[in-house]
Length: 254
Image (cartoon, rainbow, N blue to C red; front, side, top):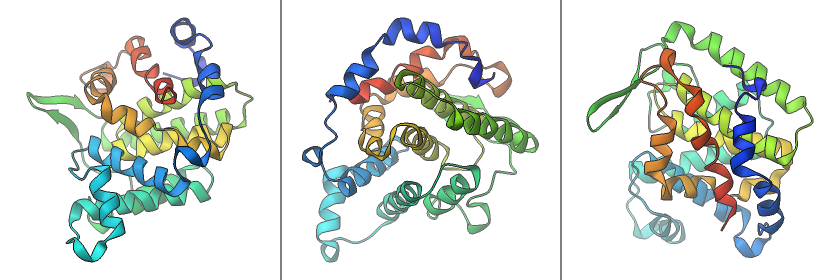
């Protein structure tokens, strides 16, 4: 599947129409919505929550205010590492090297040092309550598929895209990255960061403020359901991908 084929764009447009442009115009990018630092922390908390971290935003912010009153634990460290990865992305251009650095930063509590910021060398699956839900691509093919993905990302970054196309491609990049599942752990966190990073590269740094992670957390059942479009990497049916792609614009509605 080539991202640039725009194979699903017509179907996407039928559902989205001009909604994205209207929502962007109406979206409050001012500091009244929350300062940049706070919204970055919120993004990291919600993204961590999706992966099972139990620290809610209120608890994390209170910890930040009064660190001496709280015993630091692995879940707090996990969120702080993800915040550091967002901070790094906010200061650096989107490329494969910097993405690997982000993973190295965010995975300090998730993986041993030798596996941070490096593509996995193990076969991995995604497991749910009833067992295996998805089997990712074999490790020997990860370099190949990540090169293809980043070649397409680089081409898109150089292309003149309108707002609707940017959101379409950002979601598709998110989905494709998750399906490749290139890391031993931290794939979901880095996929959501990558999605927003791409939007920012195309539309400007104020888009770090959009609450995509919060929307996915609040609609977590739909998020996982729509990501699941095949039992393994070779049986993915991207004809079913549009329901996932149309989730992202909804984060602009609040």
